Image (cartoon, rainbow, N blue to C red; front, side, top):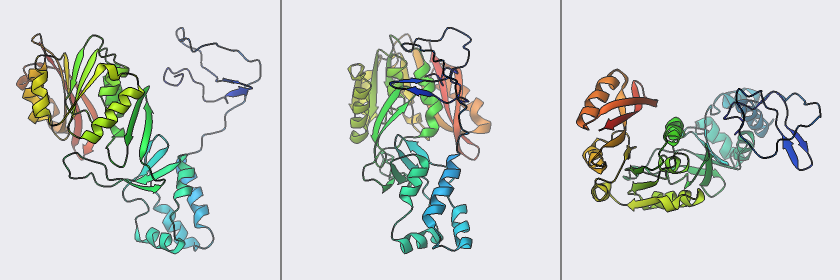
Amino acid sequence: MLEELGLLDRSLRPIVEQDHVSWAVTAPSHDPPTFGEWVHLANDPQPAPPPIDPHTRLRAEVDAWLGGAVASTRRSLLLTELPSRWERLGNLALLPEDAFASEGWQDVIKERGDGPWTAVASALKVERLGRQAPVANDGHRSSQATMLLGTSGVVDVLDHGVRFRFDATRQMFSSGNVTERHRMGNLDLRGETVVDAFAGVGYYTLPMLVRGGAAHVHACEWNPEAAAWLRRGAEANAVDDRLTIHVGDNRSSLPTLAGLADRVVLGLLPSSEAAWNLARACLKPAGGWIHVHMNVEEERIEAWAEASASRLGGRVAHVERVKWYAPRIRHVVLDVRVA
């Protein structure tokens, strides 16, 4: 909380005394919020050690695992193939699909009889390790990640005050959409009824309920397994009393919500266009907001936004460039105001 408010001074160590922990804070430009009892300790604060880059830890731990049994030239080559990125979900880290998959690494793993998974998990400060795989072509965009260390892919992820629960080997959870999750949670939705047409495990539903304060969210999700995890996430955040989950094809569920919503979220990629007419019909007679997710060529974004808003009977209020999806292709969110 201090870090999010820009008040945490990371140059000094936290001070631990019996049952108290004190963190160094910077001088606030405004009155800080109350975090309970503020205690001033007279002890001289000590400088914090420099942070250790996880990539450095990974190289050192894996190098130690390889040990002297592997010739130095071969070991050096293997270490250049270590992954440079990974996705952390609670105490589980998911490595890229090609991590430790080269012929050289497969030979070493076969020779050793096991992979360096414990060493990698230790370096990344997690308890479990998995590897990504192509998204399943099953209509649900299911994850096909496999476990390397540990047997369960069930995770509990706390993101910006919102708790998500799901099985990372079964459900997709894009960390790249974090800014959009936070943006939706930052909206003041008090008193609003929201329809999330493609809810998944609650990427946008839960932030809108927990942080945005939406009066009620109708979440449409055609994967029963994802819908069940959404329910567990809502219960974990104590917002299940303001959530209705519609399991099944939203071509059937959205018409039952006609004229009900102040806001509709269309969070489907690469395109949510097939649901536009149904989404527009969900809005109250006085109008409201539609948030359209789409993959669009960079040079076409402005023209696409104007044409899309016109088709939806509204105006462009904002275009959010979430992330690069592919070369020259952006994942964007168009906020349309329909009056």
